[in-house]
Amino acid sequence: MTTTSPSSCGQSDQNLFSALRARFPALLDSAAVETDQGLVYSWRDLERATAMMANLLTSLDLPAGARIAVQVEKSVEAMMLYLATLRAGYVFLPLNTAYKSTEVDYFVQNAQPSVVVCSAADFGWVSKIAFKNGVQHVFTLNDDRTGSWLERAAQCSDQHTPVARKADDLAAILYTSGTTGRSKGAMLSHGNLLSNTQVLHDYWSWRADDVLIHALPIFHVHGLFVALHGALFNGSKMIWLAKFDAKTVLRHLPQATVFMGVPTLYVRMLAEPALTPALARHMRLFVSGSAPMLLETFVAWRERTGHTILERYGMSETVMLTSNPCQPDARFGAQGAQRRGGTVGFPLPGVSLRVRGEHGRDCDVDEIGGIEVKGPNVFSGYWRMPEKTAEEFTSDGFFRTGDVGKVDADGFVTIVGRSKDLIISGGYNVYPAEIESFLNDLPGVAESAVVGVAHPDFGEVGVAVVIPKAGAQLDPASIIGNLKSRLANFKIPKHCVVTAELPRNAMGKVQKNLLREQFRTLFQADA
Ligand code: MCA
Ligand code: AMP
Image (tube, rainbow, N blue to C red; front, side, top):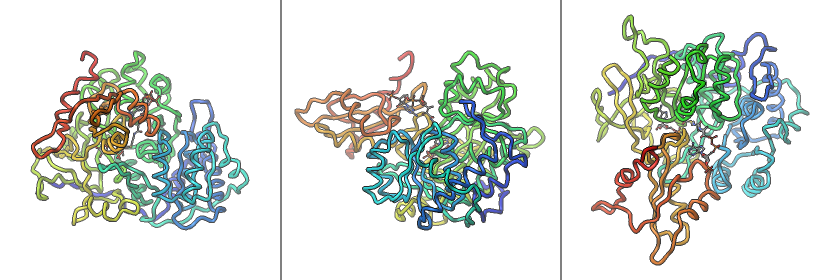
């Protein structure tokens, strides 16, 4: 079945930065960002610092469409660098700080950025990769307001006219791993990001007095786009936390109205005795997404705080696709439709979502199939991978999400699984194929399989099953140790088993479902 909501946004032909800046409050000296270190940045500070950084980028005489690759710790200055990149008309390429040299090398080779910005502590290895790949400019930016990036920007003018952009001009590239293990750069335009920002602004009923607690990393869609754009487009102050910590968030709840997080953050806050309805009484909206939220977490949150979490669903390739209602949905009469746990709500205005079965047949109500989407928020394709892009789109222009789900009679979308072999751990994506290829390259390893199993904190984590070559002696701890030196920490399997063979079906295909079943209760408290 296909379900579409009417679009509320027509305008998209402009630079996203200009659209955000146009919504800054008239009182430019009021607080835009307060950090957990006690620093306060005004809207004027954002305006001036992004102008200086944009002028620095312009002074580098970069080619049109130049990519600015950034792997730095979260800071207000890092956020300004993102805005400055938009302002100067270049393309932002954020990289998870957990990525190690093999991973960064791949991104730099693939994206060919003109500028790389990294922490001073990583300058040695990152600059080596950058220069080897022909990058001309490498700067440092630290989370204590130091680094060559800021030193150089301080010498630039604080006046800058944003570079005009068309709706389909590229604004950012977000790398997302693939089932083949090779990461693909999802190309998002100013129009993709702006249309989604406008839609979410209306759909989530942002209010003039809203204050957002920003506790997510700023190298993925949730923290960089959904949370940040939401606050900036509303002219709302952000309480800016460099890292998520449950106690710190709870301490700030009385000064805030909006919080966004992945399910793990809610699980961790629920473990805090300080979480009470009184503490959350000023809050207006708790948003969850990036990973499935257990119904028990949804229910426990309501019982402990009196608030109903709003679950929404999105992807790097599409930004946000669906959302539970913020206000009771008028289509359901006087009472409206309320948020439903276990569902991701309705397609957002402007998004067409359909569920398809085998041979492209539209599924009926409640019938499970592959989720396909279309809309102004959907990316144009993968960076320099036209064949991969073509594979993921249907002939009538729908993007195949790789998520499996259904739509009920009221129009609520539920995600029931994934056709892509993917583990979502604490809101980060881990592709088994990538881990398996590293495992298979280790001396003495014949083959391997990585599966996702339930975990009380991260929702899901990887378990590695490794088969040795004849006569080889393998030690699980050294296998994990080896992976740790080469892969981002969140990708490391939380358990490794060395065994004689993998279960296979009659066709010789590894039966991952049997492995998942074997390790299903491994991390359960009472297992
Ligand atoms: C940390 N560790 C993890 C993860 N994070 N293991 C598995 N999965 C994880 N997500 C491990 C580290 O490797 C380390 O292990 C140990 O936990 C402690 O690391 P630390 O950095 O101290 O962890 P933390 O600060 O407690 O971080 C946990 C976290 C973080 C706060 C849940 O992972 C996080 O911020 N997640 C949010 C991710 C996010 O923003 N996703 C949005 C993607 P060891 O000690 O062995 O080294 S955007 C998206 O998906 C779409 C589009 C959408 O819909 O939004
Ligand atoms: P990413 O590649 O980081 O953009 O992750 C996108 C994937 O996260 C989606 O394809 C879904 O599988 C998953 N996802 C995002 N939001 C939700 C949600 N609310 N519930 C379940 N899965 C989600």
